[in-house]
Length: 241
Image (cartoon, rainbow, N blue to C red; front, side, top):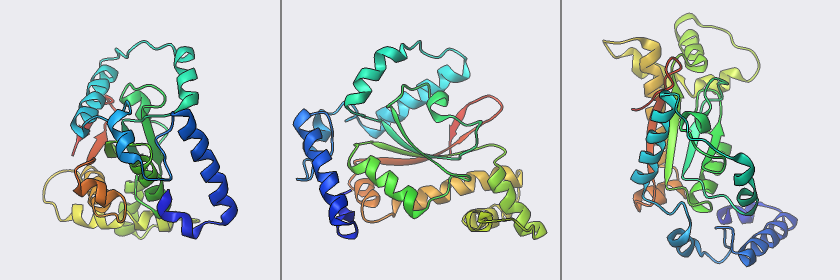
């Protein structure tokens, strides 16, 4: 994360530089202190078009929905994962325990770089993780994935409609979802919860497309795509929104 070195301690910078040099020497990591990302992107296994990454994930989801996942030998996969990771997508997902992106897209360990938080809402820490995935891991695709019956979105509706009092730090989290609920309430058809879940995903996508200084640049340069999706708890299908 080169952009943030000025804000870190000298000790941390040295430690990270040592790690990166070791990885470069072994030719197994995409991170480079000298800005060799472009060269890496041309040769890495995940240096594919965003549309190809999305097709691969949707094909995997179709297998998951049909209960026909690919057979995997995880013991055979692990040795390569020790050397490097080449995820084809960065995913901002809800932390709901019923939503497991690796399974939902029928992908191997190492294929998805996942950030999870209740309500799949953006925050500075999560944005930093997404920046890392985009710039240094070379993920060509970013997906914001909500899900049906989302409790966090439901809580935001309860707060706005019933003035529900939430404990701890929940009000801070829920406040990030409230704008989506307000927009969804203006819709004249459909279920409020469903509409708010979709709107919340769309709002996070819009935020990411303009998230400076990393994600917006990669998006505008067409090096990545950013899409929204909703996972259906009933059948496991992922639908783009």
